[in-house]
Length: 191
Image (cartoon, rainbow, N blue to C red; front, side, top):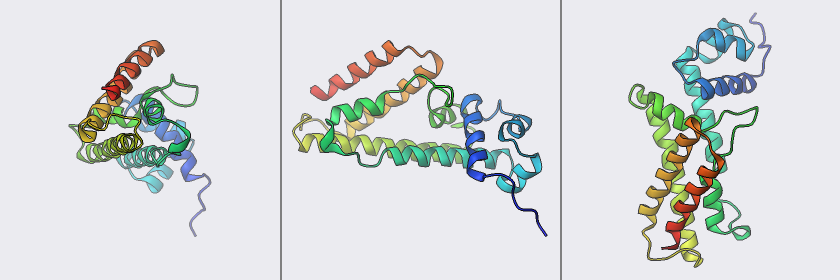
């Protein structure tokens, strides 16, 4: 008779996600995963598979959570520009989450090396870009944003800014520099 699992799967996957987010795939060892997740190596293999399979599950969980944040917000309560500003912003890390974005970090580290990771990251990026396009079109219909701007091209521009801010924050977080970059980016919406 098999022993029941003595751990909560989502809880230990969260721990692995944070470790991969902080260190990246290559730098994270199986022993660090064992220590961080608080379960035996055999339990990791039996539950999640090898290190790569565990990493992919952590990345999928992160992207799922990101997508949940992109659900259509209560637009009547805030201006579209404010929602875009909040989406672009990246806060300095607290004690629980690393700075930057796990999806962006993965794209930079594994984008050309691991087709599955690259595909997941591209899908995540596509969802974010679609969210920006939705906000732009909604803002144009509501008269908040210039209706002559091309929503698709502008969503590409906002996505580029979103990626750049997360990369900048990971390497050299400066809250004033982030705020300035966001302000300049948002000024394009007034054109």
